[in-house]
Image: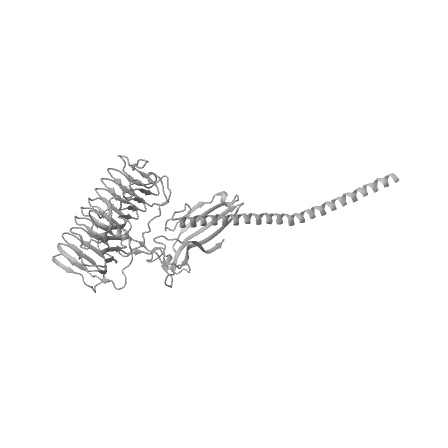
Amino acid sequence: MQSLFYRRNRRAQNGYSLVAVSVFSVVVATWLMVTASIVIPTYQKGSELGYWSIVRSSAEAGLDYVVSQLDTAFKNGTISSYDDVSLDGTPHVSQVPASVVGSAALVTVSVNNVRAPSTASVWKSQLDDQLAGNIVSNTNCFRVISATSNYAGLSSTVRIVISPMLKLVTTAPTTTPFFSYALYSQNALSASGNMITDAYDSRNGAYGAGNNNSYLGDVGSNTSVSLSGNTRIGGNLIVASLPKGSTTATVATRSGNAIVENQIKANGMTSGFTATVGPTPGSSDNVRALEAGTPRSGDYTTPIDKSLSQNQVSLTVAPSSPDGSYNVGAVNISGNGKVIVRNGVAPVSSINVGANNTLYIPPGKYKASSFNISGNGQLQIESNVTTNTVVYLEGNSAGSTVVQISGNGMGNATNIPARFQIFTNSSKSVSLSGNADFKGVIYAPSAGVSISGNGAVYGSVVGKSITSSGNGNIHFDLALKDSTYASTNTIGYVPAGGSGSNYVVNGLTTVSWEEF
């Protein structure tokens, strides 16, 4: 009995122990579950916050890097590989190098070239590339930039808007001549036939012996140049293409007997040009680096097949006719005789001179829609005038040509090219042909220009593209670089409310920021 009791008591004790262990296990498990429910989410939340920090900082780092690249390129006059150069509504997307981000996050940046609407608070007329008198030339500088970072399944985007930054300067504005080259083209320039360029100074009298320099008369383009036939460039051949410093793009080509008497200055590579390294040109050299008459005194090795960093010539819109300009109205002369232009009251229309008629036009500022001289017709500037005749071609002209000068063309008895100036923003073509000389200047930054025939040009021609295929020579007038003689361009400066106070673009600045 005692033994049985002992055994029963033992079993009871064992039962109590099992119950106690079971209860303890439940308590411990419950405690572990409660602890896990608190600790694990806290750990996960901490990790997620750390990931978010990486994602956000990576997006901002990528954004800052691309903006700095754009700003540097803007100041240097170059184009960043991250930039969007087209106003087509589609952004340019790039991946930012991991070394810039400083983490394992993948960062992509999109740059969209978008004009600020005139209703936007950031819009200023000085920054509108479509308005006359702006200080950004024909380039829109507003950008919408988005940087998106992806890491550990998380994503963050930062978006900003940048615009040109204006700096107030108190120095008097400086002016840049519209005409500093014999020929200058925004796009491609092609010269063939027997064209020759040189220079003279109309302040010293008419072109001729003692007043001409065979080693001046620069020719240039913002894109590319092709020389062929018997073309001879007396001055420098300058190709200020973008991007600067290209080691692959061929921007200047030569064939036939074409010669450059001075240097080639190109932002890319050249083809067909040869020169001898040393102080004396070789017999087969077609680039002679004669340095305006002093044989190879400068750097005669740089221009040949070497990429440079030549700044582009800024071809701004042509100036509009100022208040008080004569409204020519419709002038159509086809008979024989002489006509003197007077102030018209009709709407702006064309000037057409043909047959054997001569149109005399006194000094002043005139408005017309097109300018056409054909047959034996001629426009004449008399020898005794001492101020300029400037024709502003505005409005819509009929046909495909805005300037057509052929036949006996343009007669300028003063022998001073600045005495006759044509400005137009029309995209219709400009044509100089025939056998008569043209003594004047033409500024047509949106028009294709063709020069043919046997007549010479005394002065300067600027166009969107230029093709020369005739036998005429281009004699650049050095006086055109003097603002006393010819119109000048104040690119880079706009009056700011007071005499001697002006704004200039000094970089890029952020005008809007958001994160989403």
